[in-house]
Length: 458
Image (cartoon, rainbow, N blue to C red; front, top):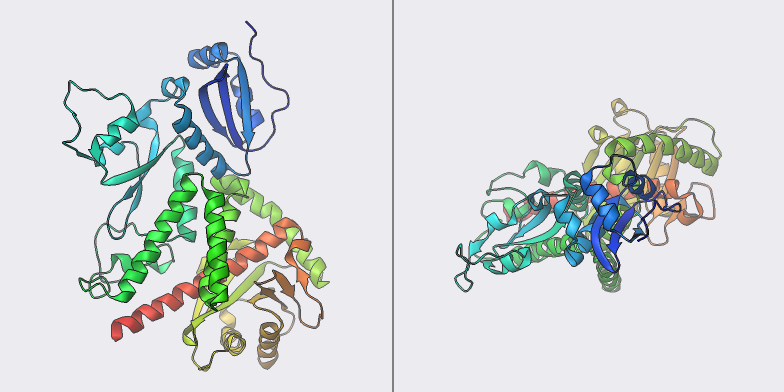
């Protein structure tokens, strides 16, 4: 019998690995770095269970993936599919993590070790002590599903972080009871807000707005479920279809939201450092030096660039119009510096005029600090409006650019042709998109808040 050896060509990338005995999978694991993780199984004194696994396995294979999140989800999928022998032996089943999704008008999401305690016995199944169910799926069928579960997952901290990131893209509620004022999560855009209000927003009359909010909320839950179940490609395909349909109907706010969700999903599956905060912080600091050099090259300026401000406008037919200012310092969001603006002087549908108003008002506040670069959501008209505002305030020495969503183009004052984002290095492209998406999210959150206030006052 051949002895399994450490493979020499294992990559330094995230992924999942499978120990097999013939064609049978006997252990599935995930790794941030496949080469380092696999090497740990072939060390001396690796432990009795590892040595037993190594002795029984006849081959070892792996699947390279683009991120730790993708590896986390793929590992869960394979464990559920194969139910490998050593995954039970090397990890007590109670130490697995499951994502619970409750039933109801506004489902909640939570993480648990013990999915069974959330179920109610179903009389259609025999569940007394004489009838022992070994298979977890069969056991769950013996209960009424008051809550559905996704899993198992092996890494709790990675799972918590994944849900945290998904919640920024598809907000959902975690409040345990209704309340009159917006919760903290609603204020920062991680909760839709209406789902945990007391009447009159949530009321027994079930208004048209109520059902619209409820459908959007449930849609967010379905999308999170799709990601956690490994259906990323299907979800992105559906979101792109919805984005195109919204654009045809000239529902540009909805189309922009779908685009932002698509980009959010793609980003979390692209960046390897998402699940390791210390590594992520170290890489951001290192990447900023590269990003800064690229921006200096684009603008032909050698001066330091530390503070970048992003601006966006959110409105529907000119009503409840809002503007946002987000701040990034050395490539990292500085949320203490975020500011929101209720549009006061523009009463027609004109993003250009609204941008001019926001920039004029922003530079009434020199105490907020001086930016090195302003990134405006839009093309040449929006850039020209911002440039006029700077000239009116006699502000000099600040770099200015507009980022147009449709073609992902960067517009600079005085430059006839645009710069395509995909022509820039990936780290710079991702930074510009991050600033743009964050300013859009922040403007939209305030816009929704003003609409809710207007609705309650009617």
